[in-house]
Amino acid sequence: MTQSEMTQCANLDWLRADAELNAVYRSAMEKMTETDAYLPEGLKGAVETLREAQRAWIPYRDKACDAYGFLARGGTMEPMLVYGCRADLTRNRIDELRQLEQGLGN
Image 1 (cartoon, rainbow, N blue to C red):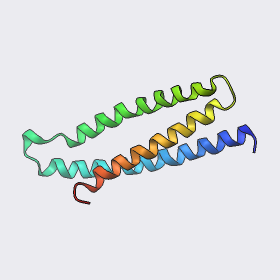
Image 2 (image 1 turned 45 degrees about the horizontal axis):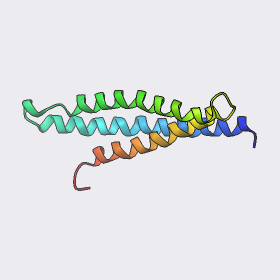
Image 3 (image 1 turned 135 degrees about the vertical axis):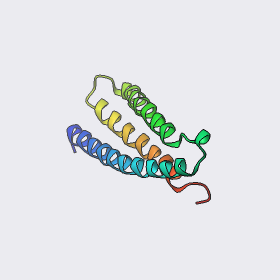
Image 4 (image 1 turned 180 degrees about the vertical axis):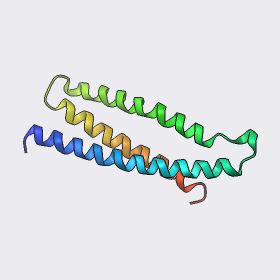
């Protein structure tokens, strides 16, 4: 397998993880919407908090993985490392969002 092929595989893996993240995020947002619906007015904020967390997480993921790419800076392996890192961090985030989606006691 060539480096180009390995990079393409890493990119496809990252794209699959990103698609799954988007689906799980939507589901977690539904759960947060349900949470906000039963909370008293002064305690609401689950939806906005999750939205803000996700908006902060995306640039974190991207910059953390760009930094990881410096292990092979300027080389043909750099994009593969970045895509692989993005896939790994995205899978970790999927697990975190699933916990929110499932709620306590599950």
